[in-house]
Image 1 (cartoon, rainbow, N blue to C red):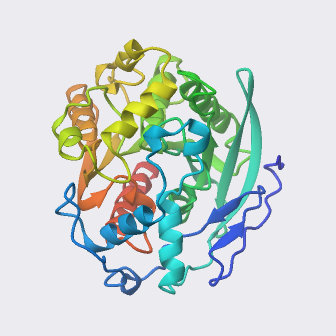
Image 2 (spheres, rainbow, N blue to C red):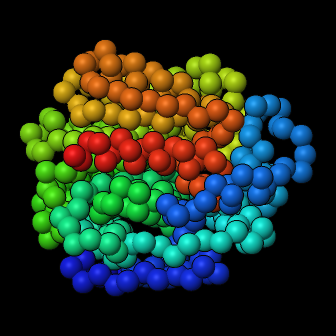
Length: 372
């Protein structure tokens, strides 16, 4: 559904409503807000069983989310077609069900949302735009790319992260629904990501944003896309983002790193799923070595200051560490933090997982500093 981005429609959701209609015509879970207190985060959730073999150091709240996700009994994603895999439950579903079952209050969003369709090569993609309810602008602008291995997930699944960034940073956030594989093979998602960034740069003033204060943020495959956007902006000589936040990014193709081997069977992401994602997105196995996928092989000189967030119990943990090292070697200013006891996808789980609250605060602090 296409909505004029110059005419925002307020997104209102009561405390008792856990799933509500966004102004761009989609269903969205609101699970983050800067007013959530520590009392809602600590001791609210307890796992029902022992820590899993693949994650003996897992925090109780994180384990409770994983137990809930496992309880749905979905078939392993890597055994499914992409169409069927997109029907599986997501970590967001587990979070929302636990919120409801534990009567955890979800504060009213502090943002308005609107939708916008834009032209890309041989098609269109949808953007969801979050604008703070407070202030009149011009606001900083964040272009956000969701995760899902280039194959699954959407703007709804990652709404919590995009909304939190808008609220905590006081920024307009443009969340990008790039086209997915296998319907759209490499490098479609990468090209869509850059086209969306170009659109944001060109339309910043109309969005009531400051065109000199634009950053990119991405999670997992979206972290890979965000870094590529910075590289493409540098190479095409258009405005470089002032900062990039890469949250457990895909950064290389070797699936025999220490973290891949330690967390081969972890949830919600494991090694078999990563192989499946790459098979679906790439045209050939050789493309896994392309610098767009293996960022550690890319020319990283001249990129903006970068924040990298990693999770301990994550096959992609070492990807983030390796990328941080390569960026530093290229002369890029890098800040990074690892969060112990949590898994891939923890970043958007603020109402339940304390480490998510800390990670979001860290990301917001880094972005606010960059925008000054």
